[in-house]
Image (tube, rainbow, N blue to C red; front, side):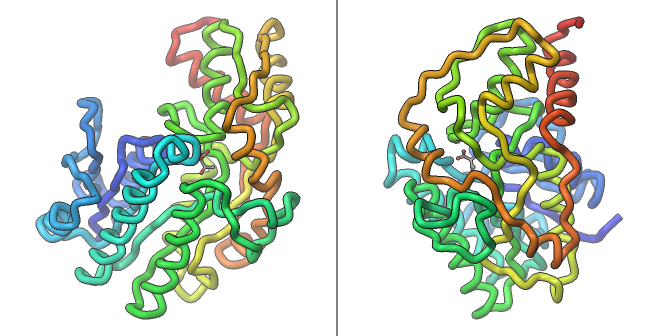
Length: 317
Ligand code: AKB
């Protein structure tokens, strides 16, 4: 068992929920402290309430628990952020700066700060978007991610803080629902299909976006965090790819299991956000630096999602 004490901020979110058991396996149950602004009562972890916009509260936990690494997973996502841009900016930036300051002040070994494909905007190439592209995001979430990438480089260069980051595509998982993202349709659609419901998609049928299955996203996160520091040539955030598909292609892959499943399309304000993002991502630098290789394609992910959600909803097929 590795000797680190890990703090997870936003542990009840989509990635946190799935990441916790993996961290507990690697570092030991007692060495992973889960925190969030709300307690669900279902946490299988050592849990503390934490509003990470409060620097004193964050610093108190870091000191009291002898934290050596932070995974900062709390953020307001792309669609929700557009409903209240200044609130989203303040929350995303205040939590980020508090985490980086805690990292510097308490000499933390490593900090993980996720970024997103939302960091890209209309002037980045849409296909196989390169690691180094123009970053002109259309959302406040994207703007906060670009700022976070630059702050991470600053803390690394100026203070030697070992901050690492991935530009996550849309993450698809069965463990919990995402909240407030533009790629959320690709999770909700499975839940409706498995329950025998029709689905109304808020993006147009041909909207291609980069996506990744949670298993791959978690493996990427842990492989990046465990890579030797000398291998990490990107301190902004690594491009990360799993697969790319449209709502129509996702529907067809679900219909191979549920032939009667029906989807209608009613694009809303999230369409413009999706249209500003890449359609596919070039993650060759992650492959070269720390050996990244995705395992899940669309058919394999659909098979897994349906199996897990069948268990959840007790549907027999
Ligand atoms: C969102 O849709 O906002 C997120 C993301 C791509 O970062 N899933």
